[in-house]
Structures are given as structure tokens and as C-alpha cells.
Picture 1 (cartoon, rainbow, N blue to C red):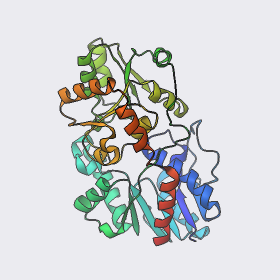
Picture 2 (cartoon, rainbow, N blue to C red):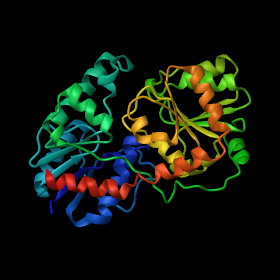
Picture 3 (cartoon, one colour):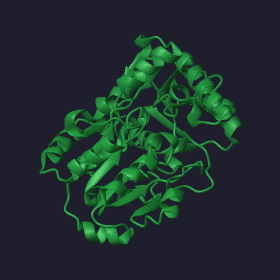
Length: 356
């Protein structure tokens, strides 16, 4: 069996979809292959309270650039690793072993205007280089695999699709007092929930406008405006729409209750490489409305109401339909979410290591 080095810096970061992928893979891989796995991390200024404690971390103290391109390769050689896996879409300039990289999405190639010119160029350059340099590439969806082949001209034979999972011990149908949850977050009841950083592709302003047209429903955004450029909160304030609330980051432990309390979970993204939040919502039994863009149709299937993301009227109708769902979307969603498991993802990932 190979000895594997794993870039675990994200294990000490605030939770996002990419971070969740790294955290859950590290946990499952440790449970199955602890003796063959070395998880490397840096020393962040502030580790989150929910940082995983059941995995063993090897800390390398070095500045970010030095950490990645010098300290990490040196440690891989010292620890006699045969394979290195980066779940973050980038690789060091050199490595003394075979390399595997996970590509979650190609946002910067799909729509460059979502990024500053410098950031977009940097993302495309590092991502393209990593995909070409790696011995094996893991894509989190068939959509991402197709994008890699079409946009970066990666040999499809070295790309393996490994879907993300759901923590089914935490995300499952449960009874909650939705009015109490709504009051806690200061949002009108019943409410529509959207979980995800407020990035340009999240389509948050259109979702805000759509819920406003419904009348009588609240809207809760969970996720921070990381770049400080999203206009949604400003639009709500300028219009006096106090039925919309912006919670920013919330403790990961609070998410199952939020999903279960929402009347509808909405995810009208302009593009996604996978989309973990709608699957988590489905696992909790909440009806989901999402866009038909990127990998979302592939991942969600017929268990969600899918709409064209630029069509606000269609979004309004879908949210209304989901809010009035009599159990069909709930049943389909729970069954669909059951397909996605982190232990399966870890098993498939280990097989990629072996072929690398």
C-alpha cells in the first residue's frame, strides 16, 4: 500500500465546500489508512473551534510560499511518501513522489469576469499547471471532468470522478421548531435558506428579488461576502427589506437545524462544480430549488426543482412550488442525498492513490 502525504491546511480553515471536502476525506482516510497517511498542515493564526481532533497532523512551520514549494516537498521526501494529494487544486513546483490533485470547479475559466484580471489569471494558471503536472486528477463531478478536457485539454484517461459526500450522522430528517429557529436569526417565518459564500456566481441579488416578489416569506443567507463586493445586503438595506437577513458564518454544528427549519432551500447559482449545500439540505428533508447550471442537474437529478438561473420569474414559481410541496421533493431529496457518502469518496480516492 502506498504511503500518502495529504495537504491538510484546510482542516484548520473556516468551513466552505472545498474545506469540507478536505476535512471529511482526512477523517475517513485516517479511519481506514492511518498508518499509511501523513497529513501536513501549517500554523494558522486562528484555528476554527470545529477543527477535527480525530486526525493526526504534522505541522510544518514556514511562510505560505516556502511551505508549499520547499517545506512540503522536503517533508514528503523525509517521510518517504510515494503519493502526495492536494485537495485544493494546486501543487508545489516540485515533489519527490507521484502527485494527485482534486479540481472542484473551473470558475475562473468558465467566467473570467467574476474575478479581477490578476486573480483570474493566477487561478487559471495554477489550476491548469496542477492538472497537467499531476499523475492523476480527481474531479468532483462529470461536469468538472468535461470542463478539464475541453478547457485545459487534460487527458480524460487520467481523470477520475469522485463525488463529494454528506455527513449523514449530522444531516438527516429531524423535527425542529422552525419559528424558534427563525426568531433566533431574526428572519421572518417561514423562510427560504441559502448557504454559501456570497460570490459573484451565487446569484444572490436575483434570489433576493425573487423572494421579495413572493411576499410573506423571509430569506436567510448563511455565508460571508468574502471579497466584499456582493451587492445583496446593500440592496436589501436600500429597499428596507428587513425580511432578508445575512448571518455570515455560523457554527457548522448549527447547520442541520437551519436546514430542517427552512421551508425551502434555494441555490440558484450561475455555475457549480458540485454543490454540497443543496445535498445537505436534501438529507435533512428540505425541498430544494436550484439552477440548471454546471453540475447541479447531474448532482441533484429530479430531486430538486431546477430553473434557468437568469429567469427570475421561473425562480419565483419554483420557490412557491417547493414551499407548497406535499412531500414529493422531501422523499426524493432524502433518497438522492443517500447516494453521497464520505466513506465511499475516501475509498474511491484511495484507489486513485494506488493507480498513481
